[in-house]
Length: 167
Picture 1 (cartoon, helix red, strand yellow):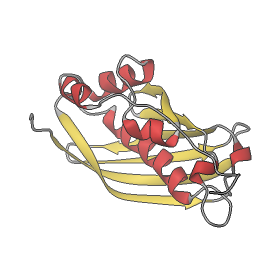
Picture 2 (spheres, rainbow, N blue to C red):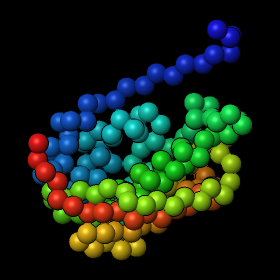
Picture 3 (cartoon, rainbow, N blue to C red):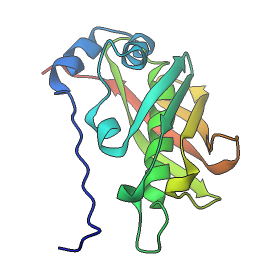
């Protein structure tokens, strides 16, 4: 192995106990419990170093910081990192509008990457807002910015809404 090899270690909570609890709550209450730390972030947050920091009805904000662990072969953060951060904010904004026992899935996502992200970019903020939330379909839009408010990426989503089955 080369001398410049780096490693990364992280931990996460088993998400299964919290999924059943989430079924007993409205989407907004569930997202607020995650943002406050009452319910741990899903494992993807630990894996990619991001978290839900603000939430209200129809709005969700995530912050994350990508390091070299997210670099692609050309030496910048892979576009999938920005896409995942935006997708999380978009989906959670939709989730805040759902009644107890409802779920959603992304049907379509469109992401526009407008600026390269590197480890020097620092903390990024993905802020999503609902455009439309109906009984079966919801749409939302989001912006990913750096700490100075410079736009890095933006996107939209369409989500299908459905009742969740209990296990």
